[in-house]
Image (cartoon, one colour):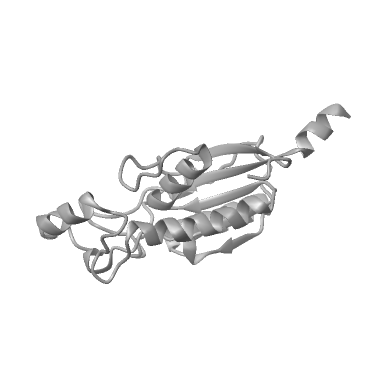
Length: 188
């Protein structure tokens, strides 16, 4: 009886990046809908210790296909949300990084929060939408899996851990679930 009370006082949220994609090395993509690599189905698994009640996913196919397959396999409902899309790289989408003028990349790297990629978005816009959905999901206080992209997940992880928010840096591994546990009594 004590164990069930303790378990009911907590909920878990898992962060999962989509599986590897079919794309040439060095290509800039964010909002572009890039297909998954062959064999991506091998990534359809969730730990038995993570009793997922709901899945939120980016609507881009590299995340949506994974969410739909996990949904069918484990009988878990899912919902797409535009706020979980990768950073919009605007005019840079689909170009090789070495085709983008170095000065533009340097300008962006020096101030990724406010410098807006032409026809794309700034880091602050990405952070705003990711923070908004995070607060909504956490408020539900249930076991939820979030399937998204490297950029949004990097920010979500930093928010969860209470670290200073960095837009640029290492990305989470493909198709790995990182679990976080929260107390239902913690109203942060």
